[in-house]
Length: 284
Ligand SMILES: NC(=O)c1ccc[n+]([C@@H]2O[C@H](COP(=O)([O-])OP(=O)(O)OC[C@H]3O[C@@H](n4cnc5c(N)ncnc54)[C@H](O)[C@@H]3O)[C@@H](O)[C@H]2O)c1
Image 1 (tube, rainbow, N blue to C red):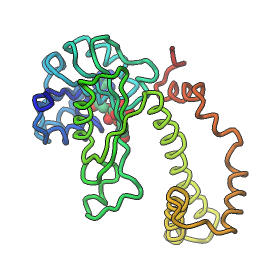
Image 2 (cartoon, rainbow, N blue to C red; image 1 turned 60 degrees about the horizontal axis):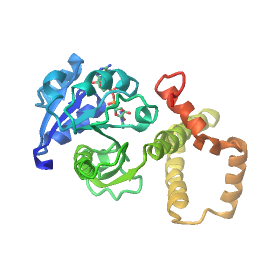
Image 3 (cartoon, rainbow, N blue to C red; image 1 turned 180 degrees about the vertical axis):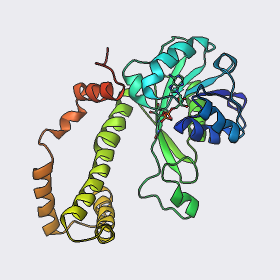
């Protein structure tokens, strides 16, 4: 069955559409592509992928990948999911819209959401191609975390193969609930991880601004310390020094609010996802 899959990629000319399209194009499956935007369509044509209409692509597809922005998933799934054949798979690439009940639902379909992990900061990259592939999906191995709305023994292993192929090279596809995937993305990854990543850059820029040092000097000191901070904290590679621990306590008191863990409450998760989807609130 999985060898004879027909897969439709909706929004094939977007950022993720181009990435998953390039990987699926190399598979043995019958993959078709749709894209409403002329520039996105041209990007596909330039890459050797033909754009067809949703009406041509969707009704015969076993798996329909919705690579459209999360804010568009409600109107796009409302228009396209009714065209899908019974017992096929809706595959989305981020849990926000699924969490917020924004997808057009049908009882006779299987719904899967899968997010790439991106290659680990601790990945042992051995080639220039792996080193250059910061996002993943080209040369550096990554993982994926997927969730199903309704368990399907038939579709789960097939969905796993599609996910591993479209985000490949993939080491492992992990499975979680939609809720828990939303706790990873956005809460852990974006609300905390990406925010702190950007905060490191803001702090670097501020250091250059308030000292007589140039950016190179500050970067030379900071980049190594960022790595040792991550490997000490996340892998326990070395203990932080006693003086460093005191400075860390000072920083935590000065910067982190006491109630920061409230962002893990469902009420807060609803708030951030509503903001991301530009909704007034999440409807239950
Ligand atoms: N970009 C990332 O880094 C990233 C990473 C992981 C997951 N995702 C997820 O992948 C999905 C796609 O995100 P993206 O960043 O590739 O999106 P994008 O902004 O690049 O747009 C993707 C495509 O959707 C099409 N599109 C936009 N509005 C449309 C509409 N109303 N009807 C039909 N098509 C429409 C556009 O033409 C475009 O080609 C989202 O669910 C996103 O959360 C994105």
